Structure formats: C-alpha cells, structure tokens
Image 1 (cartoon, rainbow, N blue to C red):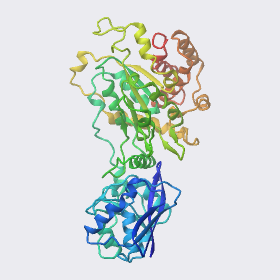
Image 2 (cartoon, rainbow, N blue to C red; image 1 turned 90 degrees about the vertical axis):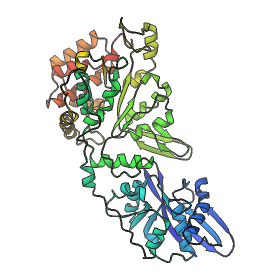
Image 3 (cartoon, rainbow, N blue to C red; image 1 turned 135 degrees about the horizontal axis):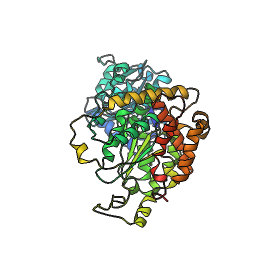
Image 4 (cartoon, rainbow, N blue to C red; image 1 turned 180 degrees about the vertical axis):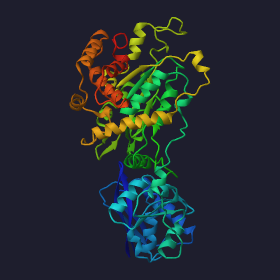
Amino acid sequence: MLVKVFGSAVFGVEATTITVEVNTEKGIGYHLVGLPDSAIKESSFRIAAALKNNSYQFPGKKIIVNMAPADLRKEGSAYDLTIAVGILAASSQITSKEIENYIIMGELSLDGTLQPIKGALSIAIKAKEEGFKGIMIPIQNVKEAAIVENIDVYGISNVTEVIEFFEGKGNLEPTKIDTTEEFSKTLNFPEHDFADVKGQEGIKRCMEIAAAGGHNIILIGPPGSGKTMLAKRLPSILPPMTMREALETTKIHSVAGKTKDVGLMVQRPFRSPHHTASSVSLVGGGSYPQPGEISLAHNGVLFLDELPEFKREVLEVMRQPLEDREVTISRAKFTITYPSSFMLVASMNPSPGGYFNDPNAPVSSTPQEMQRYLSKISGPLLDRIDIHIEVTPVPFEKLTETRKAESSVAIRERVTKARQIQSQRFENFEHIHYNAQMSSKLIREFCVLDEVSLQLLKTAMERLNLSARAYDRILKVSRTIADLDASENIQSHHIAEAIQYRSLDREGWLG
C-alpha cells in the first residue's frame, strides 16, 4: 500500500515542502531513499521504539520510504513523525484520508514524546502559501508557528495524539495567538535603562543620534569608562519593531532554533559575540548552514566589545554585509542568503594598556604600540562606521549624584519621531528606511548645505586633517541631527556637531 505524507525542509530562512512516500509490500527490510542524512537514516530505530512503547506496531514487511524531491538533501531528525505517520497509514493502522491535508513534523523520543524542531515559523508560512489545511508540530514550537493566520496549527506532545486526531478520537484543538496583543508588549520598562547611567550626557546624545539614523558607532575609551554599559542600553531607545520586522526577526531566530516557547519576537535583538568568534560563527555557514551573529542581530544591535582583539580576517568578512545588509553564503552545492540589517556598535581601548596620553595612567603605551594596536582595524571597516566618540571616565561628583537621568522611554520618543520623518522622506525608495542607508546619490539630494555650513565643513576638514571618507559620514550624521531637531534643512550647528564625531579620522589617531 502506498501513502503520501508531507513534511518540510528549511533552507536559509525559507521552507520547501517535502513529500514522504511510504510503500509497504511482502518481504522484509527497511529502505530509505531521497538523499537523507545520518540523522534521518537512524530514524527507523526511534520510530520503532516510539510505536512499540505506545501500543502500535512497526510492520514486519518490506518498507520503502522515498523523500521527494529526491535530488534535494534532507537533514535533521525532524522527519521522524512524518515517516512514522506514513508507516502507520501504509500498514492500515491509520485509515484517515485527511493526512494529505497537513504538514507533519517532529523529532520522536523513544517513549513517543516529541522534541522541538527548527524553522517552525518558515514551515507554517510555506504551508499556508501552498494551501494546506494545517500543520502538526511539537508543542514547544506552537507559539511561533501560530503567528501565521488562516491556517490551523496543532501542538503535539506525543505520537498518540496525532494518531487519535486522524482517527477522530482525540480532542486536539488548534492554537490561536492574538498577534496584536503579542505586538503590544512594548519595552516600556526596559531591563537596561539610560536613567541608571550617571553623567556621560555627551555619549548619551551620541547614542540618541546613532539610534535615530541607524548609524554604526564606535566607542573609544579607557577601561571602566562605561562603554559596555552604554552599548547594552542602546536597544532600549530604538523605535518599536514593525510587524514586518518582527516576523523577519522571528523567522531567523526560528531557523537557528532559538525561539523555543517564544511567540512573536517584539523586542529588538542584541547580540554580543566574544572576540574569539570565528568568521563562520559571525556571518553564518557551516556544513549544515546556519545564520550567524550578524543575521541573528537583524533589525537589532550587534555589539563587538574590544574590537581590536577580534581576528582581522573575522572583521573583514563583515565589510560586504555592512554595505549590502545581507550576506550570501556560497558552497559547491548550494547558495543561501540571510538578511543582516543591523546597527554595529563597537568598543575599544585607545591603546594596548587601555589609556591614551594620560600621564597618571597605571599603564602607558608608546606611540608605536598605539599605532600598531589601532592599525588592527582596517580603513575600509572604519569607513562603514559613521560615528566615532571618545568616552571619558565619569568624575566622582557625577557618580554620587542622586538625581535620576533621563529615561530610555523619553529618549525613544524623540528617536521614533526622527525615524518617522526619515520614513516619509524615503517612502519612494525601496530598501531605504533611515539616513544611514543613504547612497552617495541620495546624500547629494537630501543633504544640501548652505554657504555657511559648506565653509565650516571645508575649514574643519583642512584643520583637523579629516580624511575624504569622513565627508559623506558627516553629512549623513548631520542630516539625522537635523531630523531630531525637526529641521527641514541642515544648519551650520548640525554640521559642527557631526564633525565632532569623527575622532579616528583625525591625525594622531590613525595617522
């Protein structure tokens, strides 16, 4: 008897429907074909034990299982439940014709319970597109898949529940998630709040500008000056995610298996990889391709602490994703593209000893040591960082203040208003949503300077020995400062403030 059951394979962040054909006939043997990997080949042992421990039979016949399309490599243990249901139907232990209307996925334990799978949201979206009545997945994944509307999503805890459902005996109900309610859970009381930061008003202003324009930022300062503390609070002032951004972010984290018991991700991600990270862990890839840190930070913040301590080749692989806001991983047999539109926040000490030109410093470094240390960061990478700011230690008087600083919620209101201005400005441009994404052509169009501002910028570039690459960055940042002031045109004081945020371009830092 031949039966068709449907599963799903996830490649990148998209799913592809897999048809599992099970045929039983006279004889003995179990044959699995259709490019399965080792985890799928081992499924027969898990399925046999799970069925036996739940009072069902693994048929003593010749069983042929084909996973179509046969030229597409299938990976992972998530097909256990699909194959098990196919075997039960082919051996007439399930007689329902409804099986072909559902996508069925899940990893079986030996006692018949189900383990969570990866990519449940992508699977649900594809099932809806292809007109399936519903999907059956492990109960741990049901919250993320139930975000998709107009399709029944069933959370399964045991193989018996699936069999009883198709036999009409169980009381299994589809899970419903109110996406509007989920989405309304905004971050009004953030864990990390700028209200807790003593002093550092200038740096907070920088963070506000970076958040408003989506600018990459690097913080340079001695140990203990508060660089990491400030960076951790940046997500709390970013605008709330739109529904499109929330779905994109949830889909990536779902594929990486990081959304267990989580529904829609409504808070922007904050990723902080250690400086020993490899290039593959940062951009993604591997023999079974997975999204890397830059994709997990999509629509959020990627924080690289102690930037010069990262291997140079690891930092260099970020150059193209920073520009294109996506990363394409190419291998001999496949090519996968992951989105990677994130804000880069980096921090570093100004020298190996941690202190810069400070006669009272406990550790001092020679100019040659400093130059060698700073040269670990390449010019092309710095070219993609709009704001460079020096962070100085907080004086004792500020540390002992009892007055609360401005809260993240108040700052976020200003940031959100500035982002709305940018959304209207770029509404006719695809893939451009905020100032940091402007191309040179758009900079010429939207960053027109008056004579006074132009002269000021010219003087600053000559006197401070600013590099040519600083020119566009200064214009982008000044456009954001003008948006925060709700100013239609860039004024001379906007340019003056933006010029201050190019520390590493000045002579004496990177020569």
